[in-house]
Image (tube, rainbow, N blue to C red; front, side, top):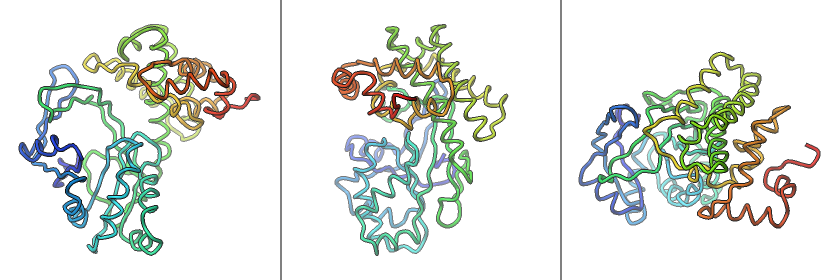
Length: 343
């Protein structure tokens, strides 16, 4: 979207091979995972190694109008010191906006907090005058993949990028294809409690049935019933809370389940189900909506399946099973999920 909106795109990464390839080719390929496998070449682009070229990173930050991240929630705190140093050295008078495009709620706010932890109070005040941290919600399935060309990426056709317009400093930038809103909460919860909830229930219940991929799982009639029922439960909460139209939200649910059925995306249930401790959190995709609903029967099935996720290749799954062994299911429901015995 940034390329199509006329931005000069520069990637910052610590993968030397990828940085060198991007600078050599000055382009990469995006392939749509659909019938016909249409693709588009994105370029010209360039890249720097943010680890070995810090001065170049700071120079570019001084010139930039927009910085976006797509590194994963757990990596934000690792890149915060470099961004903080770049902001400390920044002497440009123009505004700068930093958007964390991560699979989490309040990603930009979280990144801002991490960055500010490396700045003095005076520096924080100076930065706050010209630098904005608008939160956003991003939605696009990018499965694990392997290509001969490392500069090729396969993605599903569907995408959504919703940005909180109130978080910008200065004039709202032009980003064709993005949706700017005054209140991000309805869109974040709609995505979290439909896409993420549906994906998680599909994966956890599918794993218990011994199925390998999300596609195999959602094609199973019983699993499909549980997933659809869970999304009707979360949908009832979303419609009542945010005024989404019932018929439109039902179509949204249908579209989301259709994405899981995409035969051109092979996504392992073990990948989608990974990090069960985080996903079983009190405010996350399973327990979060379940606590807001009077009779969350299908969500309870998903939570039960998640508690039994024992894939040894995932450290959190191993830790979860150890916690269950130590504290029992009721103890884990209280400690991990925030569900008390009277609930």
